[in-house]
Image (cartoon, rainbow, N blue to C red; front, side, top):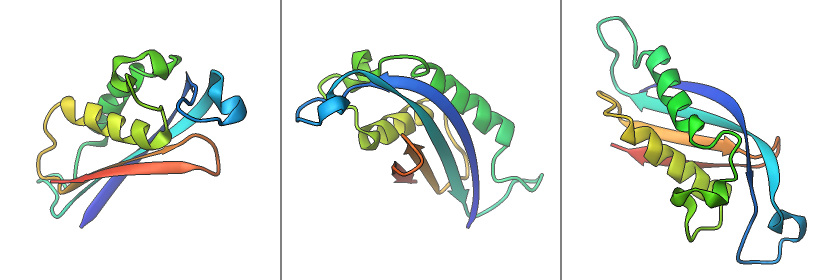
Length: 125
């Protein structure tokens, strides 16, 4: 199985809801780091699993939704605590809405909110 991954950083704000998490209940920002990894069993005629430029363009479109925003205010997070677990799943869903990913077997989105904490969400096709 081949895998290709890209990473980007972006800043967004959020606040946690539904519990008493002290300062995390107040709006604050993170410099998120996101990794998108695709996997599949075969390469195309050019020896690529996927064109990295296409992968990067797709990710930039998705991140434009969140960059410099208070994510609690976005419809995708309505009724949800904006945890990094939910964020990883929502970004993966947005990523798939950008069009088909031919010949791929899996997609994983991993998101860090700092150097110590990350979450991921994966979909197997």
